[in-house]
Amino acid sequence: MKKHFIFLIIAFVAIATAFVACKKENDENTNLVIHATKVLSGNAKITMVEASISLESNILPLASDNYTNNSFKLALPKTVAEKYLSGDANGKLGFVDICAFDEYNKVIGIFGLIDVNKQVQVSYLYADKKFAVNETFIDEDENSQVWNCSFVKGWNTVYYEAISDSEGKVTTSKPSGLNLQWYFINLPSPSKNAGSYMHYVNQIIHSVLTK
Image 1 (spheres, rainbow, N blue to C red):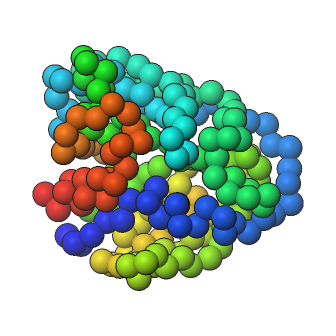
Image 2: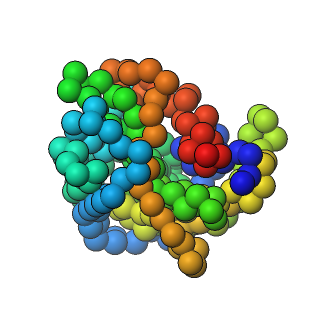
């Protein structure tokens, strides 16, 4: 098992203004329905699930559902306001966080769709137009990510693959032979909203993939 698995949304922060634009098209936005069943590691403390997009201190709830029989279903709206997206005139994106709440309305964990064996994680994001990102990004810890993504206006699915301890690949093309499973990942301590847990995400995903 690889030692590290870099969570996609962490990498996004470093590249938010580095997009390469394509010709804009008036693609019709469509709803995204996220349906999770047979979630692993879930527990009785989870009462509600919420999908949201956050930018700095702004959090936009997108959809919510009761957590029943280790399952949930979230129907996201067709559009997302520009103020919740990061980027520039070439293109803007917003990543979806899927959070678990307890009966006291506190965030106690997150949900991830992962192929543990292939080290692939699925994430959902919203793009304000059609554009592409084809570039390699290196963060302050010298971890590199190769992005080869073609985004459509509206909702997109992206796949992050850990190639090595310090190298990853991000694409909008689904890799073949995936065996994806939904996981519930506990947070170190309860928090009131999604924004307060983002710095834990890398360690949390790592703990799931090294079990």
